[in-house]
Length: 149
Image (cartoon, rainbow, N blue to C red; front, side):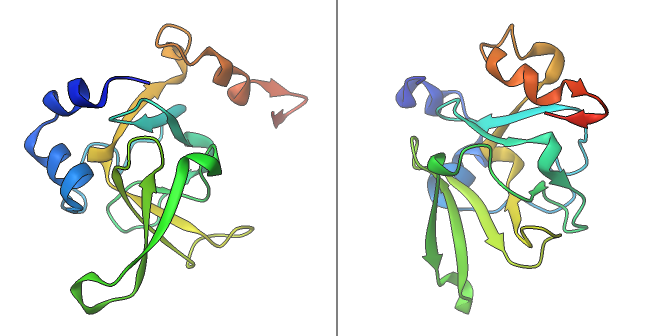
C-alpha cells in the first residue's frame, strides 16, 4: 500500500474534500463520469483496485457508476443520514476514504448502482495495467470465444 500520508499531500483540494471530508464533487464536471475506456479504477489514496470498466454504466447521474466492486472486501458500507436523507455510504476499507454511495436502482442482475466520485479514484487504462503494477487484471479484459473472462 502506498503511504497514506504521502498520498494525502498529493491530493488536489477537491480530492481531499471528497476522500477525507465526505464531500461530493459536481455532477457532469468530474474526470470519469463519461470515461468508458477499458481499465480499472483504483483508490486514489491506497492504490487498491476498486472497480472495473466492465462493470461501469451510464446512469445519467453525472458520476461514474458501477454495478459491483472488483473486490467486495475492499469496500465498506455505512449508513449516511446527512442532508436529512438515509443513504448507504461507500468507503474504501484500506484507506478509509469516502468514495460515494450505493443505491438499489441499478441494472440487473445486481440492481446496484455504486455512484462514485471521480476525485476518489485513479483510472488505470488496460494498456498500462502491467506498467502500473496491476498486471493480474489484464486477463479480465481478454476475450475467450466471444466472452470476457
